[in-house]
Length: 255
Image (tube, rainbow, N blue to C red; front, side, top):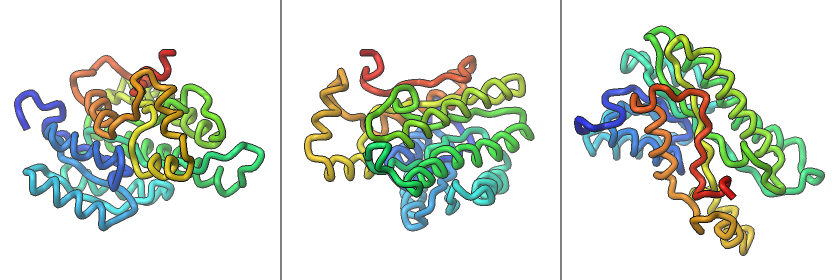
C-alpha cells in the first residue's frame, strides 16, 4: 500500500471471490490497501486466495457464503463487521452464466438458477451491506452487471433479464441512500476471460472469434480490467458518482 492507494484500510467484502472477476478484484483491492473479506461457496479456493494475499502483506480473511441464502449474506456482512469493526465497501460480484439456449427451449430450472444467484443474491447482499454501512455513516457498493444488462444478447434471456434487474437494484439503492452517505454503482463488463467464458468457448467452436469480432478492441477483457474499474468506483476518488452503470466492454456498446 502506498500514499496513492485507492482503498487504504477500507474493509471491503467481495462476493464470488473464489474465481474469475471476484478473485481478480480481491487481488486488486488488496494491492490498493483494502482489508479484504472473501465470500464464495468454495472454501478451498477462498483459503488459498486468503493465504496468497496474506503472504503478500495484505489483510485478508474469508467466509464461506452462498449468496442465494439470506442468512449466508447476513453472516458474511456480520463476519466483516465483527472482524474489522465496520464495512466500508462491497463488490457484489457472485453470479452464474447459464447455457446459451433459445428462450422457447429453456427450462424452469435454468431460469430459477440464474435469477436466484444473479438477482436474489445481489438483493440479499445489498440489504445487509446497507444496514451495516448505515451504522457507520456510509460506504460504497459496486454491483457486477453486464453489457447484457443494457442490451439484448441472443439465446440468453434469463441472463439478460437478471443483469437488467441488477441495474434496477443499483439505481433504486443509489437513489434511496444517497443522502445517508452510501454510493451504489455498477460495472457492466463485456466478455471477460473466466471459467464461465472458457467453458462457453470450448462448447461453442467459433464463438470466441465471433464475440471478438463484435468488440472494437477485438478481444475479451482480462478479469483485472473489470476489477480496476470497480476499485475506482469504490474509492474516495469517485465521491460524486452514484447510480452509475459503467460499461467496461472494449467499445462494444459504443457501436
